[in-house]
Image (cartoon, rainbow, N blue to C red; front, side):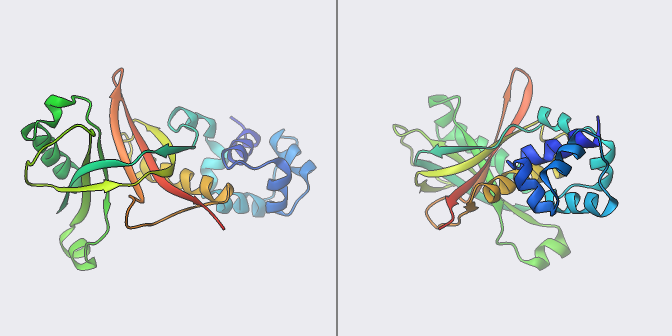
Length: 236
């Protein structure tokens, strides 16, 4: 680990050339090159500017090996998600994500979906329409879980809301073992996506006919992953 490699890691993570990073820091490109080669150590004021620009802690920048994060987070990529039908349910509780996923998995069996498609995709996203009083006084939060329904699948099984999500372009990142430190790893995944959108002249876009963001958890070869999707649109 070195301070220089951490600076280089943050610069590349945010898709900045040395020239762009130098302009952001109000320094020369040669200074950036010398920082990254550990020939010169930035002044404290510049270290604080770097932390502010990339939303990291000073101790993390100076002491940790930030390249190890490559083992946790994939590169952010744009992905076109086709339109899909879905069955969804909202739950407000102290542990809504777990509660509503359990509910939907039960629905998936009762509706015949899991039998028809054992790999049916269950996605979820935060439900923001919970009053401040319910959150602060009772510790209640909201979460939505939804099964993506295959085109050929038909059911009238009650207990869910049926809807559609139109085709859209999403910025996507994969987080490895997100539940090891969920209050750090998942928000950081969202941060990397938002940084990517800003650096590449995109914005997150809200619309009534498309989900603004959602998550998909799965296991592969005994490893737990989460894909985070954020709807993206080019700035005009």
